[in-house]
Length: 84
Image (tube, rainbow, N blue to C red; front, top):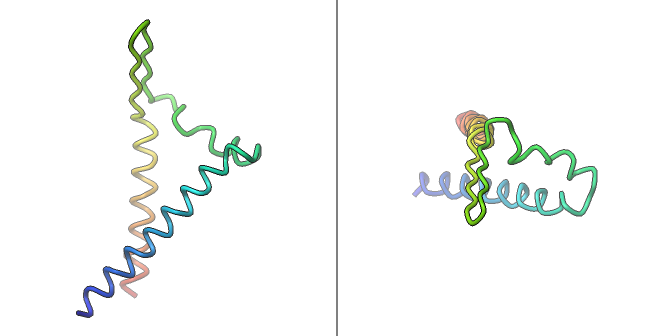
């Protein structure tokens, strides 16, 4: 049973982090200073965008890589924190 409490706490922390990031991104539209800080999301040089007359395709390759690296660092830090 002790193993489940560790997993439960990790899920709670991950959920709180997701809520905080979601609130920050939602409020970024309302506050000009936050909007400029997060304006790069989806507009990096490696993001592909194709627009035709009746067709639109958007593939955020570079943004996905940046988020992957950031999430990897966060989870590495959390695992290091819980190992201590």
